[in-house]
Length: 71
Image (cartoon, rainbow, N blue to C red; front, side):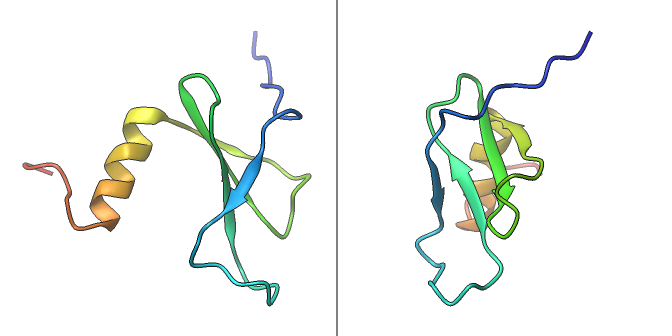
């Protein structure tokens, strides 16, 4: 049985690289147990991706040029 997580109490934030011109942005929420919720800022009531913490950390490391060895 699948249960959708309750994201109604999370605090969403945009990237520091985003501007207020209404462009295409993603938002992430911190402090959600075991997962990083990610959503499209243009559709705040739409679906969110739920990414495991370890996968998010590897993704961010890759963006910063520090992709784990062997990948």
